[in-house]
Length: 109
Image 1 (cartoon, helix red, strand yellow):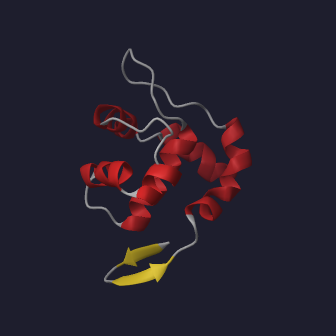
Image 2: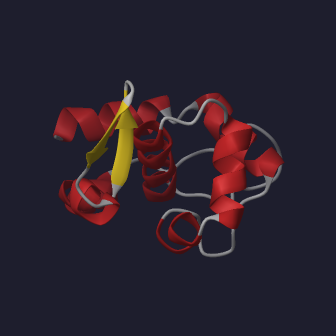
């Protein structure tokens, strides 16, 4: 997958290969919690997948990322949750940033 780093394009590991070490860790990771009354439409694995894609592709905003998740074939197939993701759901989830989950994952790695 080509990614832009500074002003140069590089070939990065595939999204799946990059996240492979997380498979066993995510089984034990604490679940994401909603900041409102409605349940989240994303789990920790999907959040990490989206955030990894966001940083590898060097998007300038969450809205740009969401547009790619809707329109780009690769992002829709391999990054976005199976049912897609709505803007409000994405920002509700990312607002908390999954700090507890990310800390757990990084500690385990």
